[in-house]
Image (cartoon, rainbow, N blue to C red):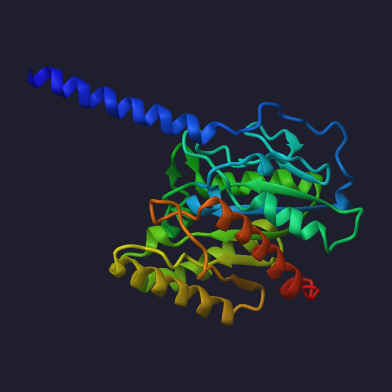
Length: 281
């Protein structure tokens, strides 16, 4: 009887897991459209998406997220260019979901010259601390900084790197790590700029959400957000993207689909208003 109960519980857990996976991938695009002719390098603006899971994307992909635009490009796991459809991140195949990249690019296209295309380069990996990035740790089979460097080198062959979209901090929202976050964040921004060869590279940092539970966790997330604000105030090429009204999935860690789309638009609005000095209409 005991063994039967154990097997029943295991069967139920496997069933729920498979059902969850099926729902997660239900709207993933069935067809990949590869780019036959790349834009000229001077007309391709490239943005690297880095950080942990909220940049990698954990939202539910819906049909509206898989509509390709010939002016929005991304790469696959082999570095081949394709027309961007969500989900973009390929570093975590069993967990990937909706991120903010496509909504960012679509919003940006509405305000930049019509001859410009956008290239999105995913390099985020979930549950990574800033110390892991600085130390080039291997996380989920990805060497974090080495991977970033390789993406930079590839990007430079095809276009101009216009900025880094960064979202990270939940993994550092711990009592023993928070005191070192400001220093390490400054080290990382310098490292990104050294790697790209651009001392003025715009780095857009998204805040952590305001929905953490229990409240003790939220206090630590708020401490990380305060540090992000502090770093941005002392670095004229670092900008904060605010998230305090955004909502989470049921896990109270990751932005839901609607909030991921809003977050992408806010990254774009911040870039337009703060970097390009184009006021939002």
